[in-house]
Amino acid sequence: MIKRQSKKRDAIMEVLKTSKAPLSAAAIHEKLPAIDLVTIYRNLEMFAEDKIVKKFHFAGAEAHFEFQSEPHHHAICLDCDKVLHFKAPDKKIVKLLGLEDFEVDELEVTVRGKCK
Amino acid sequence: MIKRQSKKRDAIMEVLKTSKAPLSAAAIHEKLPAIDLVTIYRNLEMFAEDKIVKKFHFAGAEAHFEFQSEPHHHAICLDCDKVLHFKAPDKKIVKLLGLEDFEVDELEVTVRGKCK
DNA sequence: ATATAAATGCAAATAGTTTGCAATAGTGAG
DNA sequence: CTCACTATTGCAAACTATTTGCATTTATAT
View (cartoon, rainbow over the protein chains, first blue to last red):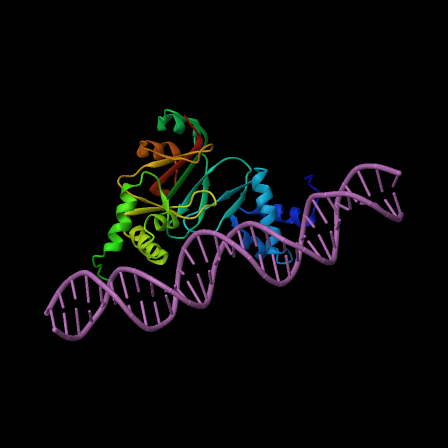
């Protein structure tokens, strides 16, 4: 399935790129009401397959999508629900985990607490 | 709301305690078909509130629940979908993260890769 | 035993996401 | 530029996971 250019797809990507926090399909739809929610879902799914966008499931909530500029982790504030990004020395952490019989491809660290 | 004893609740807890992997509400219902799915959901939610059971959302799937014997992290095999547990030096990891302006209450580490 | 409120089951509602299909619109060939 | 081909979109409807309302059952304290 060869991809074509599409203004709607570009608009969705633009929203993702300019957002500092992960967005749900519904949140994107609010910013782009002219684009059908279904179209948004379909494009997000394509982005995720292409690994251009990362798809998450924070505790019990709907899926959230985020443009994957560079790998990072998430800190979620239990008070205000804000999601902060941070980078970490992944290799060192993986080493600290001391996993045997398991080859780590991806590391995902999430912390919950209070932002200040 | 004072809790009473309940055979069904105990049965659900027993299933959780004896399972090595996290279970979905539906999976528990399969093992305990006599208990209504709604009752299972309600009890799981109570367990989670009481922090006796941990609730997860692995990539795009339904919620999974797991008896919280002692804190640990998850390694998910991309080939066979098996979920392995492992412990890690949480404090050291949190220190490595070097988070400023954020007070960490919970650390959750998930790795994806290949088990052997 | 009895009253009180918690626990359960059933049906129905809700929320998030996916699918089928017909209409629309990029793209490459001529 | 025009045409054929098929990707993309919108709408309605299906689906899945989860929650809610309410009447019934059941545990527990008196």
